[in-house]
Image 1 (cartoon, rainbow, N blue to C red):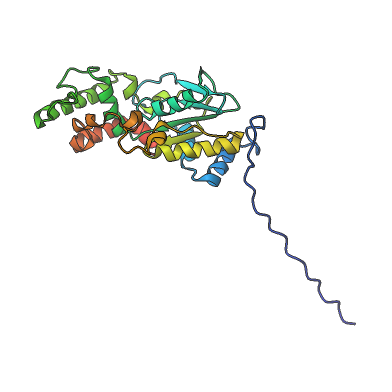
Image 2: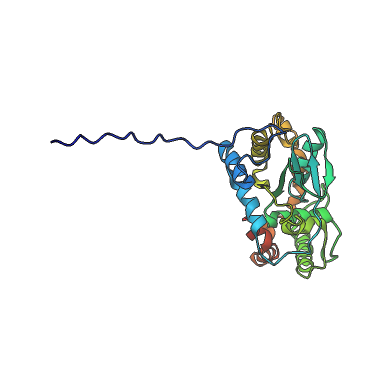
Length: 282
């Protein structure tokens, strides 16, 4: 007696993985129960996960070194846009603050509400330290001199005095004697990331792109519509217009910029802000 032929078994149907669907403001913050994984999925669906990974690196960073003492963060909550902005001086903060203020406003908070994305922007520490040095003027040291006036002639001798002042302030920071808010490291000002972890950290070097990415994430996560533009995005069409707070004083940098600093001085700045370089992967 011949055996019955083996039956053909149909292969299982492959189901494509589903990204979290766009939610409304009243929906649960984490459809999967894992907010970090959801944010990665949202970001991957609309662009890149880099700002999410940078935030997770900062949250998990166990580096004990800090460029300065820990300070309480300044956190601004926008109920309309479902965000808490962890403000960092000299890192595009004026642009973000203006965008939120002009479109619904914000309130200062001490904790992150459950219906909000906790975000910030970070900047290359060398560039940020130079910008902070320009901002503080006569603060922290009287060695050399501050930058000159707008119509003042720039000479090698004057530049040398400005760089000498910058180097002296780096020395004060190394000894933790200068605690100006514009010169503190990001990691010193984020606050307690165990109780209020960051979820998105954009880079000032790609600020408009990262800002737009955050808006797309908010649309998917909370149903946010008509994400507010940054001031730089509003005026780009006018080639003769000076673009916003970040570019309005470019003449300052003829007095001091990274090309005018010695390799040794740049290395000292790198070591001074190594918590930011390492924890934020800058």
